[in-house]
Length: 158
Image (tube, rainbow, N blue to C red; front, side, top):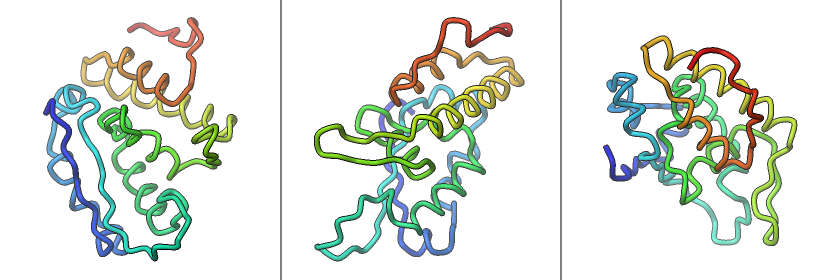
């Protein structure tokens, strides 16, 4: 899965909190998920009025769907595409943030630190449970979100 796979999420799926669009990803084993790093994109088919100024991450229904997807697919940040902002948008669905035209997306620093630390520990433990090492991938994920890891962060065995 080296090319980016765009998964369309319909308004009905959002309202039903259906994760059916992610079924193919649920069937992948951990090694395949790690190999698919950065290859998933979401396209939310959500109707909006032309004058609706909200970002997608400000729409409560989309945030709720994203929270459920994040809770049931803790590996999701590893597979989300990074360069076009898919990972950042996903995290914006989960965490307090602000957006300005000059500075772009800014997460509440404490929230980002807590979420990122939790996710790093969780995914490191998950991958090691399968005999895999994804620390390099996790460090890239953190860097994309502007989170710098101290050199002493990983104290356990790789």
